[in-house]
Length: 79
Image (cartoon, rainbow, N blue to C red; front, side):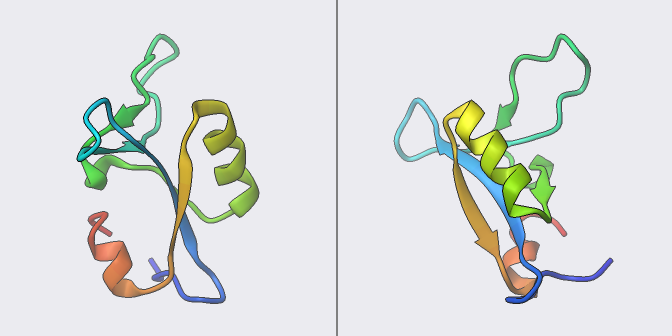
């Protein structure tokens, strides 16, 4: 797997949790009934390679987008 670069970034959708010092990351639903789509575990987050997809999810879920552009950025997310 390649790593993100400034010309080919990865995107993460996140939001501030119920407690302001906790960040929650958007993850893939495990099944159709799965309603808890955010997790505090960065390693379980969904990485997007397309800004349009990340923007759609962020808009519908009330989240924000973070761009990952280096190998070190990806390490935080276990990649």
